[in-house]
Length: 303
Image 1 (cartoon, rainbow, N blue to C red):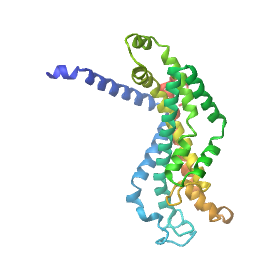
Image 2: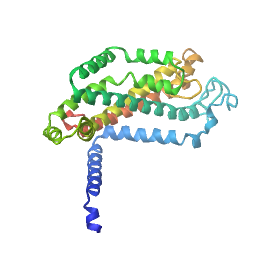
Image 3: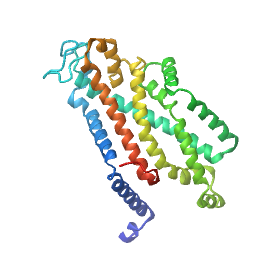
Image 4: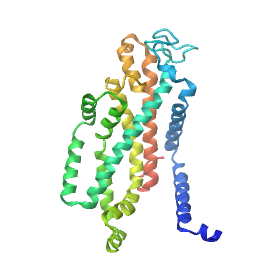
């Protein structure tokens, strides 16, 4: 096979189109200052989380070998002070980023996967199946998400898997509604009718035609749900429903509450994890809004 034939093969053309699409997306995304700020913040937190074993070491959460005095204020040795066990709060904050970001990401992926599956299938098949699925979706929509997550986290074992499942299975209805509406719009297009006329089955139409057209919406929805998932994880951990053996930002707030940091005025125990949760949630929200604006300019999201 000659070089000319290789460069013009369907696979090479598909790769070229994907690269051109990614470059076009990045050029448009760069025009959103808020989105760039959110992306920079996320990159910073992700690097801190990945480098946590090198920066603070895996023994930072060890209670028996705590390097400082309990509830010591900020100092040169401990820039953010210590907790009630004498552990370095800066190290705990960096290490907790790993758990909080991982739980938020996994819970968001689970939520979006459930919502996309239900939305695509309900929009494609319609009929009684769509009616049943949408009534179930409506039930989840009217129920308080946090109450359902607390109920699931209470009856299941206290672990990170429980937190991921509790958040993921209670936050999918919005995605299902949006994906179903987009699927109904895609199903009316002429190439769907041509695919059916040529013998395309349900699986072929959903995976080759419908799903690629709803993926931009799914991507934008994922970035928005991650921020909600991180806040939900922090809330469950703050309520004592998280895994007590791991360090997370919500767990730090729960430890501060148990240690009486609010009444004692130990602000360094409360403020840093709270700010970290707020900044990461805001960063994901800004990125999600920017992605929405790029993929659908008619939304008119501010720059």
